[in-house]
Each structure stands twice: as structure tokens, then as C-alpha cells.
Image (tube, rainbow, N blue to C red; front, side):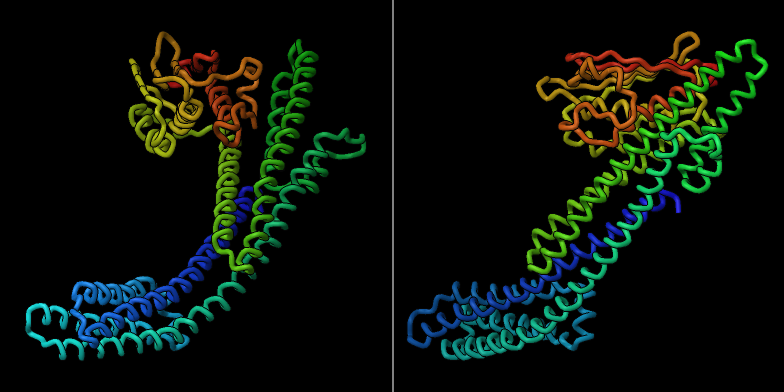
Length: 484
């Protein structure tokens, strides 16, 4: 199985486990709420009993208090019915406790009759003795409903506890074992490739055989593609008078590519392992919290696991985009940059929602641009989203401007902002992989600017930057002959 599929499977399994755990926590909390509703039912019935006793002792009737108590009693079975979802109802029918709904419905009818008596007494249509008699009948029914309600609810809650907690424990145990296995296979593949590329092979070792044995999937395809490209380049320059210099240059490039690949494999394995290890530990805490009955802590830990998996999914997507950046697409069409900007704003709604930055775009093209829309969407979105993320909170009017135009034989994109800027000592590393210079301000995979650089290099373009405490400006220049 490919690494990307393994990672996606890990995300799916963890998301399923978190969903079941959270649902279990809410169902357990719901059981406690049912008991609380019955307690309040008894409490309000007791208040109504006191009012009835006063009437029996010839104390003037406080009709407003009596009506208020009956309304409170009536609201409780309504809340109980609203809390019961289709799954709860199916469970109650299966264990023969669905009479709870009938009890609640009868309680509502009793309350309606009591409210009718109150209304008749207010209008003088009912005598004091008849009114007292009706209230006593209602009280007896309310007390009987409370007694009948407790047993089926206790039985239902017990069944849910005995079913859901073992289910969560079984799924968690399975996930821990399976995710551990998948993470070890991923780490093993990356580690083997790193050792293979970093070591100095003996003369009697065949690299193709070693690749066949120690690598598979995307990693193997990546290495084979890189080696094949280098072989093709060497064949094309075989008869050149500068053969020796070019061979030396290609050898150095190969070494650099191997070093970069080894670094990529190490950083990727580290960034992939971190959220997996954190999720594994938190899953153990969730199990312990559920055993201890601490559903609030379990829900918080489950939410953290979900956030860790979101980070892992973002990293996987960015790695796949980076891998595809050098692969050409024959499907080239005229790009509508106005629509591209509209689509980008929709995708960045989460970032712009509470962001005080003003985003302004200017498009001034004298000729249509024909290319792969996805490349330009990723270039512009990464540059603009960085400007939005790293705005300067100490400036009164933060902004991000994007200008798209053509002049002479060049297509130009300029993205400027007045944000916090990039430290001078790190500006040469902006387009390196896994680089983040303001981790306390925003987090990400660290692959966005590397992806931008890959796309621009594919289009034979250039990108430059100027940055200071006043802000940052990126300028992209692409020859028009690549875009028409």
C-alpha cells in the first residue's frame, strides 16, 4: 500500500474512533440528564403539594404559583422526549423500556388537564373544592409518573454504559495496534531509503536491486524518476565538448538531490510521526478518562486528537502537491484570473473572517493567458494566505495587495503586504522545504513556498522578494512564450 493511502487510512480510522468516543460521552451525559429531569419533576411536584396543603388549610389560593409549578412540571417530559433520538428509541424498544415515552406523554396530558382546571377556577367555572380535588388527582398522577419513569431510564442508561464503553475500548485498542503497525511501516520505508541514499554502496552492490528490496510505492517511483531523468540528461550531452564538466556538474547535482531527498525523508518522517505519537498517547488518556467517568476530559482529549489528524492530513496533501508540481499537464486553457481570485477568496474565508487585513487585487492583462489553472491558483493562494497570516497587529491598516499584469514579453505577479516581514537572516531560506519563521503566529506544513518555487521553475519563471519591518513584496516574472 502506498504511503499516502496508509496516511489517509490512519486519518479515517482516528476520525471514526474520535466520533464514536465523543458520541459515547454525550450518550452517557444524556443518561445523567434524564435522572436530573426526574429529580426536578419530583421537586416541582413537591412545590405543588405545598400549595395544595395551603388550600386544604383554608389559606388563600396563590393561583399564579400553582400555575407556574404545573408549567414547570409539564416542561420536563417535553425535554425528555426531545432528548430521545432514533437510536435511543431503537435501543429502548430492543430492551423493552420504550414505555418511558408513554409515561412522558401521559404526564403532559395530566399537566394540560391541571392547567385547564386552573383556567376554569380563574373564570369562576370551578368551585374551590372541585379545584382542590382536581389538583390532588394531578399530584397523585405526577408522583406515580416519577416512580414509573425511574426504572426504565435506569435500565436504558445501564445498557448504554455496558455497550458503548466496551465498544470504545475495543475500537481504541484495534486503532492503536493498526496505527502503530502502519506508522512503523511508513517510518521503516523512509528510514531504509534514507540509509540507502546516504550510504556509500560497495562496488558489488547493485542499486536497482537494493531499491527493489528496500523501497516501494511513491518513494521508489520518486527515486527511479530522478535517476531516469539524470540518465536522459547524461545521454543528451554525451558528445558535447564540455562532457567532463557537465558530468561533474550532474554528479554534484545528483549528490545534492540525494542529500535533499534524504533530508526530505527525515523531516517528513519526523513531522508525520509527531502527530501520530501524540494521538496515540491521547487515545490512551481518553480510554482512562472514560473508565473514570470523566467525559469532559475525554471529549477535550478527543478534540485534540482530531486537530492532530487535521495537521497530519494537511501535511499529506502538501507533500502530494509538491510531488505533482514537476509533472506537466497537457490540459492547458485560457485562465480567467477574476474567477480564480473569487474562488481563492471562498477557500480562504476561514482565514479572512476575523482578519483585519484589506485584500485588494488588480488584474490588467492585454492578452489572454493560457496555461494550467491549478498552478497559478496554488501560487497566488499561497502568497496571499501568507500575507494574511503574518499581518502586523501593531499597524492600524494592515493590507495585502495582489497585482497581475503583463508588460513586453513577461507575465508578472506582485504580492505586497505591510506585515511583520521576514527576518533578514532567514530570507535566503524562504523557499526551502519545512521552513517556518513565525511558528508562534501561524502553523503549517512549511511546504507552501517550496511549492510556489516548484511551479515557477516549471514555467521557466523567476521569483524574488524584498522584506523588512515595513512589510514584504514577492515578484514573479514568467516569459509570455510559456503562457500563450
